[in-house]
Image 1 (tube, rainbow, N blue to C red):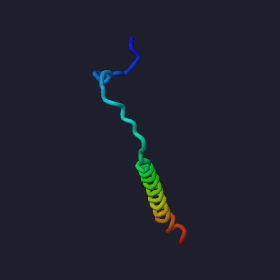
Image 2 (spheres, rainbow, N blue to C red; image 1 turned 135 degrees about the vertical axis):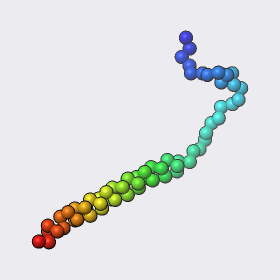
Image 3 (tube, one colour; image 1 turned 90 degrees about the vertical axis):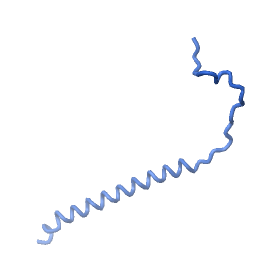
Amino acid sequence: MSQHNIIGSEAFDRTPFVIIRQVRAGGMRRRRTRTAMAFVAGAAATAAVGLITAAAILGPALTT
C-alpha cells in the first residue's frame, strides 16, 4: 500500500518544480502589528469605560 499523498495526474506531471527564492516578510509583520494595536486600543477603551463608570458610581459618595 502506498504511503504517498499523490492525487490524480500530478505524479506524471512533466513541468519543473517551482522554487521560491525570496518572499517578502512584511505582510505577516503588518498583520501582527495590526492585531497588537487593536488589542491595545481595546484594552485602553475598556479601561476608560471602567474609570468613567467608577467615577459616576463613586463620585457622589466621595464629595459628601
